[in-house]
Length: 323
Ligand SMILES: Nc1ncnc2c1ncn2[C@@H]1O[C@H](COP(=O)(O)OP(=O)(O)OP(=O)(O)O)[C@@H](O)[C@H]1O
Ligand SMILES: NC(=O)c1ccc[n+]([C@@H]2O[C@H](COP(=O)(O)O)[C@@H](O)[C@H]2O)c1
Image 1 (cartoon, rainbow, N blue to C red):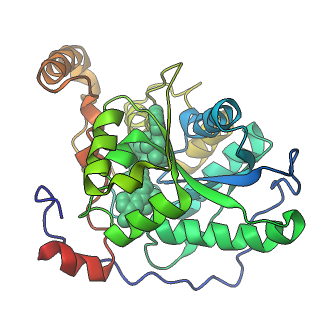
Image 2: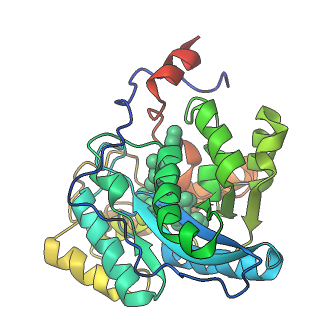
């Protein structure tokens, strides 16, 4: 256990594998056959808040497909991609309701992609579902459909940004889940401004040298630093978010009046109130310079510690981490 992580006081409810009766695993866009039958079919799953979904969330999948084609073409063929929005039980400030987040993701996938899908299973569960359980769910459902058609098991992998990789420490994740995710599924990690990938990898290696064997790092050749937090801040300030997220999502946000006030957003904002913007922006730049001089490059609003709530352990691990 890392001594830097506080004792977990609130254990989440026991993960439930009950599936609501109306639920059907979305599979209409899954490829049913492989172009090269000797390869392993690969499904990418991105877990997160998606509040709201941005162009970068969608682009992560395209970057991962390019990465597979360029570096792993002798092993994998991508046959599907899923976005799995987290449920309302996720203890994070500033989230729209799961219903809205699912719908925004669906609109974005329907209108900007011909292969991405949204799996609402995680968001519709009454209890918080650890990411390991979500990946198990997708692997089970996808294999029910594809294994008989392809005669082999599908490999499911987690697609995420480097900040999520950096959060992978006992205290935020259970050791059992890290073991399961990193050894069974593997990770496709998109580098992200504010997180040192090499530091994150070193941290993971120190915990268990085997854990990095299935981690693929994807460089951002055209850096894109969009975050949902900055979109929410822009919306509150009445600034344009055009070209940062799909138009259909912008329309949905306007129609439903989402992200217009501070709401539950408690995390310190790096965006100043509109009247003081000029001066505050100046201060922000000075701060940023100070932080960069001190700690290397990072974005003020996206320090990893603020990004991920620390109350996601399974009950048995909460006990572990307080010892
Ligand atoms: N600009 C980005 N570069 C790399 N990865 C990203 C980027 N934006 C989002 N991601 C990744 O997408 C996944 C889901 O993101 P999430 O919904 O948490 O968005 P976010 O922008 O990080 O949200 P928030 O600002 O609310 O913390 C995470 O693994 C996150 O690291
Ligand atoms: N223990 C876990 O399974 C664990 C820990 C931290 C984050 N996560 C997941 O990572 C994602 C993080 O999303 P955000 O970046 O929006 O906080 C969420 O889907 C969350 O469920 C899972």
